Image (cartoon, rainbow over all chains, first blue to last red; front, side, top):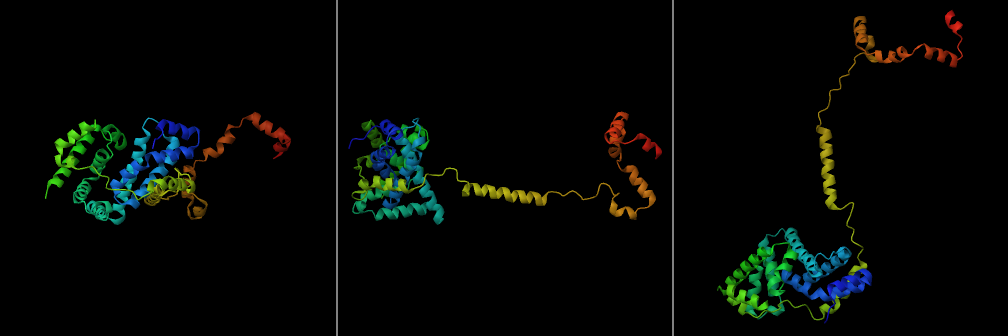
Length: 181
Length: 142
């Protein structure tokens, strides 16, 4: 499906039918946002809530959006914050240490129908869950979403050099986990 | 660029790069068809976000801390002794001896009370007598 350019969508939002323009923005970015969020929180229902919250925040703040950032990276940043806050609140609410949230997410992996019967894919997903949270973000954005480091830098507010180093470490850890017995 | 990316990955992680990249977390069937309308419904019913909530918990905790500090400050502030500056007051004058009364009168700053009278010159007095239609001869008789 062909999507309109971001600047055209923003122009339509400002000068035309804002609800229609927003609907087009949701249609353009929903799959990427959902995928990004889902890789972070694993569970579909949680990913659904966070994806909806992300777009509600986009709607609430779109009129103040300045085009010194790309629309796509701005939406990604909102989605990333939603994920990080969700995981932080989960830890606070249940007084769980970091490892317990990650093991809860790992438990959800075992309930994922698409992973059942695929031992290698399951091992890869477990390896990703063992990464520190920020490193996991960087790995997912680069490996699955194939984002440029420059765009990731805009989303995460981290230098390109630091992101490259973080991705490199993440890849090495995953490789070690996958090749160990 | 993708080729370059894959080459980098192959060098660092040959096993990982050999794996087929899968989308393991598929959304349920038809999810993306109904998501835009679900979001539209939510933004339709949600009130506009109030960014300046007066009674938000965030501000209330600072206000609470300020009140506690204020009360503690008032409670622990060193109180001045309530000693009267001048002991020559109506309630204790009967208890004083004549010498003590004289001493107090000497210390009492009565200059302030007399200053207005002393400042008045003759013209003020004459104007006062004219304004109040007082006959000067009447005064002389007193």
